[in-house]
Image (cartoon, rainbow, N blue to C red; front, top):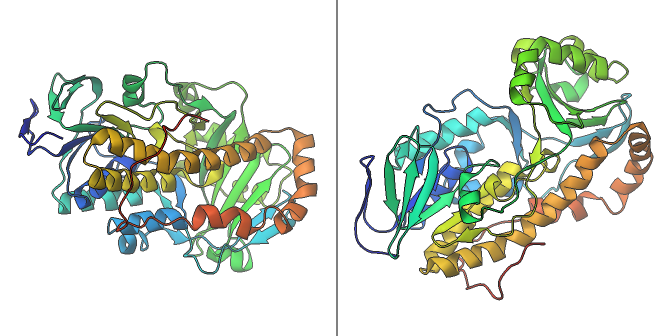
Length: 422
């Protein structure tokens, strides 16, 4: 890396180990915090002109993701938001239980939270650490030189640093700058709808102690009791072979989507009752549930990808955010221990690609089952109880994923032969 100071036309300055982090969602801020811990100087550039406070649905941070957040000092804060994930219950859509498992006793429980809750924690920590965030900076191009890289933004400003990290999501601009032939995100054949209901689940379920997944007659339904016992959070993955335009989805309105969900789940229990008391004002729609296919090039020159820009598994994995924060921390370790950025990027890819692509492939199979027709759902109901007791036992399926921990103090070794896409 260069050791000279760097400047930018938007007024920011650096001292030579400066990293431009493009994307201010979740992966970008965690990357910036990890880079600061590793001794580098990150600056975050976000395309939107305002923060995302109050925006976004509910998702899970799994035990492995909580472990990665703890590395950058966020374990206690993140452990105080949302609610813990209790036993996971697989149901038949008629109120019957096919299988139940409570995770692994020696691992912490994951947490369900709204994206906005985690976002607020990250923004507060960035400010506390003095990490600058620049709003309204939509990346349109880069220029690389022998000693650095300059980012060009749509507002006419530029910023120069030593490296540039693309944490700009599934629609990543940085991915196409690294490789113009890079694949785009792939539509899963499902759209997502979710919200809250005043329906109170009976017994333990109503106190937020379990998360339920049911393959209904016509669509997949998930739900859990709110921790305060006030009602139920729910979501539905609706088969939609042809993707809808986001504007088209929004134009239909929340009330219409709630009506459609009620129709799809009219024969499902307890979905029918949960939706009967659902509040359309609390609903959010996600027009295109997407995954990232295998990305051949994770880095080029002084640019590298992290998070959903390079590995976005299906939401069925419950691992999107957790894998993103893992990768953020691993990238920082590699840049800390391997001063040559080419070697650092290669080591980072070697550490991450096998893990994230295995998890993505497993989730894709689950996603295909969600989008299957009535026959496929019937087969699932028949085989699920046997599978959960044998080859899909929690120890076999959860240990490799949830038990993953990053040893920050361990030095990163250079990678072996070049990693190639699966």
